[in-house]
Image 1 (cartoon, helix red, strand yellow):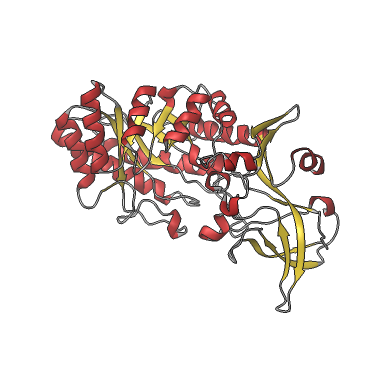
Image 2 (cartoon, helix red, strand yellow):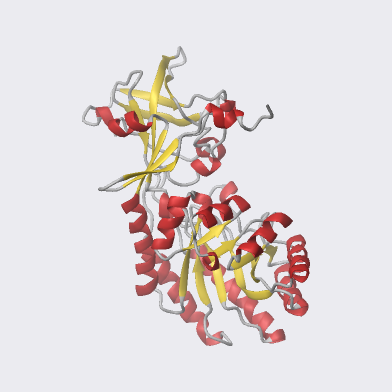
Length: 413
């Protein structure tokens, strides 16, 4: 650890290739052994973290990609990822992004609202194309997670509401216009989910919607997706059901519904992100200063913080920390692990017991591989960190460290 920090400086994010491969393997095994009710496709949710190297690794693991922006599309293309295995999400795709997606030949465009449906229909007419689409539904499902991580309730910013009839109307509209290839139905209930119920309810409601539309049109989806969002163990929730349990629950759900379906169960699409990369990522910081306050708070200030990991400030995510140069020493002090940014809320960990630490020591945050780097910023014009991926044989740079030259390049000369 010290050698990597010396070679690549800090802050530094280190990903373990084997951990990512093992997570992909667990999904493939669970949904081939414990779920046999239909075909299954696994798409990696790029918003958790994406780079060309990681896109290539997903390709090698036979995963598809779920992308949400033109930038993520460009990364997929840069990595020579098969575009037919890419699904384009997002609640406000621009016309330029939609045209880019069509030009690149993405496999699926997931329609999120009426404006987007009309926009894509018009573009398809103008370009004489017939893109395959999924309709994203807001299934009105309650989830036990932070309100910022709930995405499937009736008032959610994402998807056509199910309870209002908009989802059904959107499906009928696409079928009537006959400009788009309606491939299926999609939903997403939330993230950091630790129970199977939201997935089961989601599949039930999507299949019920499909049956209603079938009665009117004889259309039946090729694909159906309850999204992703499967959680991991965290400091505040140490118990996490296995992926196999999710597969078994969906198997039971589909088996119970199958006799009522007018056609075979559609291909099941899953979109894991956090559960693929979170455990694989380690954030490494160096202590720059310490401070004991009259109020009883002992600060250790590190050279990163909310600029590279805003999750604790944004929605209260909790981490643990290790001092790799003092692993065998007992805890001697309660610290507040604080970032370098000019915000009182820039606290990575508000209270943690660690050995006696001093300036120059390293601090590591495990399970930092998801949703930290993708939300990184240049707040205070601090350059973003380097990112590497390692295995037993090699070290590969996934993102070079940003420089002041990179920052200044944004401004006119």
